[in-house]
Length: 560
Image (tube, rainbow, N blue to C red):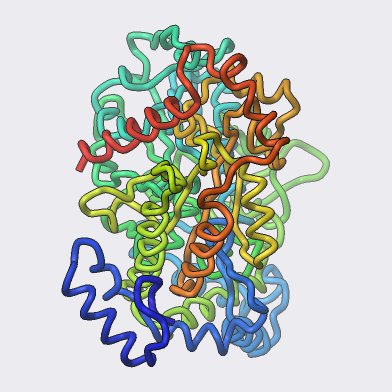
């Protein structure tokens, strides 16, 4: 299948030659076409029969697995007896080999890092928060563009008496000097969200620590990537930060997560997002010099059992070196992975991991697979950006760093957008979801468990979210408009098995169903209240989102 801009009817060889010619002719606009790996089309046709004609555009939600991957996993599990690793040294050794291979995938080894297997990125974050050596002098900051799983850490920071707050991702590089660019939260919430200024930081905030700074390597909302070049400086600055990198989305792009160049203290990933299979397995990767912050303390002789910042720490089978059922005596195992991997690990899934890595490597190098995915996303972005109604009104506003000069470094393979009818009013995302479903297109709508990115992109304040909730809006529903204002976005995302044919189907839907579309009667009634009941600051919803999109793009350009 040739790219959307290539005329149909050409033979595969002629189409490929035409693509190369186009890429050379207009490298700034069409250079991405040279990155397209056409052999993936044949692989997908042979190995992803279970798609049954679906157009899958939710790679940010989960990757797809191929038939070859399942066959390789089955072969790995059938090589020999896999007993409980607490029983079988052979199974324990297989887990150790898989652990080493995952570390190698991310550019490091057990000489510098410990890998703790978890059920996913969320459990890795929870384990970190429950085990971290919080003190009343600690500061916890998280990027506004953070997944809810990261935002939830503030509850544990609050429980430990630590100060906590949030910051804009474009201000990340300034946090090695002071906290002036961060907004402190408290029992009353962030006053800045209602335009009244942030709560004040104490003069010595961050001086005592240990402090934790959390942010995504790549936004699961828009695909915008963080500048990881400042991580080393943040770890050595004043205040000194311990860095939690949420790499659940970043690690989906082959080769994008390299811990040799990004010295984050803690990194979390989910393997189903990277390989598609297995689900229910992730990892918390910890630098050795940060491991003491997660290691439990103990009274002499273990008389009171393992302790953490909140008091006695839970323990389970496999994670203690000794325990008595008739007293408080318990001693934690000395290895961090042994301590945090409580109970029997998901050993069958772990043993299958190396086979999944090998299957994807058979498709080509990490660079080839990464570029192919970006090429498909870039083609979709350029086509979406060009769509207009007859009136000249843009069909959609797209968020992220797609317009950066080095977009392939600043932006992941995700497009988040809001759409407008021909009269300029906003389309409810539920309409687009319904049309897509009817055409066999799988995509995601809403805020994608990233309230901060949604707020920033849509110009929503804290009071707006509270009003939406009072109006019956809850996370995960299909209420895309309230008083004419969008409550979320449409997200399409791409992966290694995506092709230009997927782009063609998506663009066809937009051109045939949405361009020049006017709202139906019920939708008009839904939008009619926006002037009276909309933003109380006097701006239209269109203006608010235009300003938010511009503000989001400018800092990224300045940072580069």
